[in-house]
Structures are given as C-alpha cells and as structure tokens.
Length: 73
Image (cartoon, rainbow, N blue to C red; front, side, top):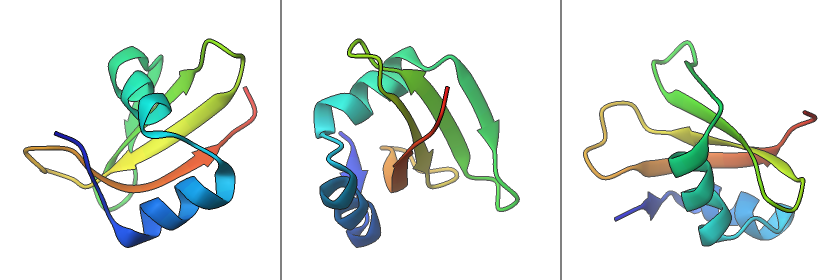
C-alpha cells in the first residue's frame, strides 16, 4: 500500500500527477538513485510521454511518497 505525505498530496494536485502514475513509476522506473538523505528517487517515462520522478522515504516498509515532480527526459 502506497502512502503519501501532505506535501506529496499537495504536489500531486499542483502538478496533476495521479496515484496510478505514481504506482506506474514505482513499478516501471528506468532510473533509481538516492538523495543525500538516503531517500530513493525513481524516474519513469509514462505511456503518454510524460516524465515523472517520485521520492520515497528511506527505509519505509510500505512506500511513503515524500514528493513527486515532472522532469525533462
């Protein structure tokens, strides 16, 4: 089960990124790396051509989404 911080939900609304797109990114990412705090960042190209990245809280058993954003591919 994916959970979201308040910040992530705000960014989802602001950037029109859906739950389904986030789940797609986590399941079909092409790039994974960590930020300085150790949080994994996943990047994926969505079927509609959009590029998103999802930041997940480090060591969360069920993924806790910290933030989401578009990026240029």
